[in-house]
Length: 379
Image: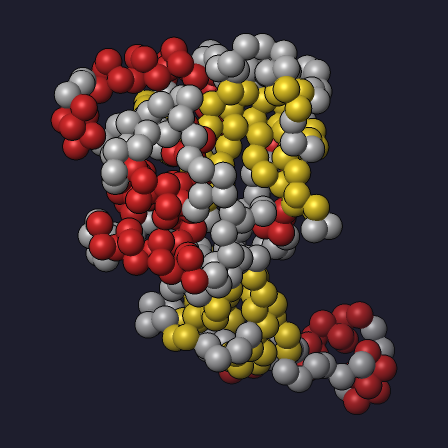
């Protein structure tokens, strides 16, 4: 028994990551040209106006997204040929709507995106275009939105004009997800979600609304378009769907600058993520120092003596993020409380056995990004 005890004590204690979603950050969030500056006073005026009209204080993602979708939808009736004054802000559009003005899908998409942005949620306008967008008649495009859900950790398609989102087998869909399911012959398996309160307001059945909508967007699987920025130049990025040709005109008229891609990763990318970098506070001696100090002759000697010099899990954790409008980090051990941090560093020592750490970024509106979780075993 004495021999067994000695053997156990001479085994090095190992630091092993057993579960993690801690991966390299994608910086494509820099390609999103937001319609509004989060630091502009107009954003806070819009936010205050919304809060004066609808109670959302207890709601969280994704429910807040759907509540705001329904609220925006109910602000005016659709009129495809009515436009707001040039350079009208979303708040001004809402104020005009409160006096009876009507607007098109363009304003539904723009206002909905700005409303969400004012609440700290990333939303972008998406143009759904027919393959005949270049020289087809009016009606070759439709405007909707996609919203990044921190809870779902994905882009969700939202059509505020119709008060609709989409699911398949309980999972919310982006527009590209809808397109892929259609290609696979599963278009009719998609469940288009409409709030029951909205159905009651418009006095229609869900079956009727969904049937009409399913036929409607069948026309718009040529191209998917959203605003895009690179090197401080704003354009539109176009994801090719059914269409094979690039275009330079819009229904016979001039078009904004266009950048084309076949890669959905250029269009869909994770944001609001946090990366945890593990940096040892004390680094191990050099190989030559270890060999000299412990008089090692062979690789077998090295392995047998490893318990004497094996690295200890004493780290400085460095945090990085790809969150627009970042404000601060939060950190917690195991199942403890989230602790706001004053900077991007935490000193952390693993205890014997299983360790779990969590980190997340928080933006200036107080919205938390998805948690990065790392489970480490030290034994």
